[in-house]
Length: 281
Image 1: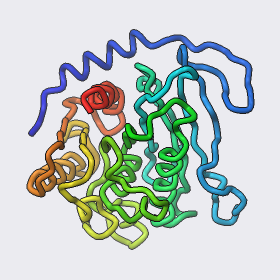
Image 2 (image 1 turned 90 degrees about the vertical axis):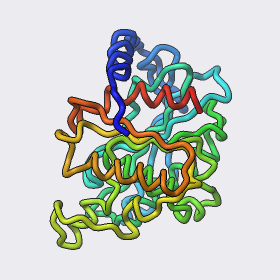
Image 3 (image 1 turned 45 degrees about the horizontal axis):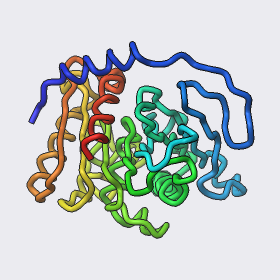
Image 4 (image 1 turned 135 degrees about the vertical axis):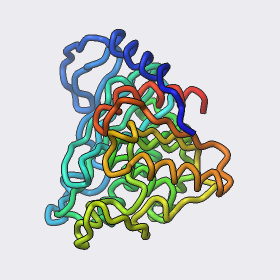
């Protein structure tokens, strides 16, 4: 089950060496400054109405990094980490290769938003991407859902459970892949904290990706940090998810453990694995 990650680490180093220097570009209504050669950024696009300030909807925006002349390119939707309480939308520059379109998503945060609202924000952002990414050169038939930590948790909650996306008229099975990085697979610790449950007291309920395991969901790449350096047995949660997906008959699920990398540091060597997964799917 555990895979050696020397190739992934070398690939990450190559990506770092080959990364392009930022370039300046004048702003226009659609795009803001290029930071990787050939890519432009469309910033702060609302994926739901922003006029309901009391609900915190001003957080519901996303950024798109794309190459203006490209068409029908694979898309990565990236959901940021931060324990569902902190963090802002981001676009990992290491993913800006081979004309891949990357969508960085902001979502509302606890305690100002409920877990249901946060999951719904993630689903709304995915639905927006499915319906609008063609105008940025993306192929709506080749969308990959990824993110780190809390973002990985949201990947699975939207990709495994069909209900959140169905509210927007879409089916998660149309995704080309789900790629959670160090995502919580039991009930998220922020949900448990709000219920007075301690971090080391595990729970599996409807707010756990494990609760929604099914063998017919899109291809899955699970990436974890070193089991001895991860948060609260995070690797073991992901290994259990991998095993249950196999037992459920899932035909395309892979797990990597990145030896020597802790919860935060595992992101950099994981990004080349995402690009490799995209090429093979």
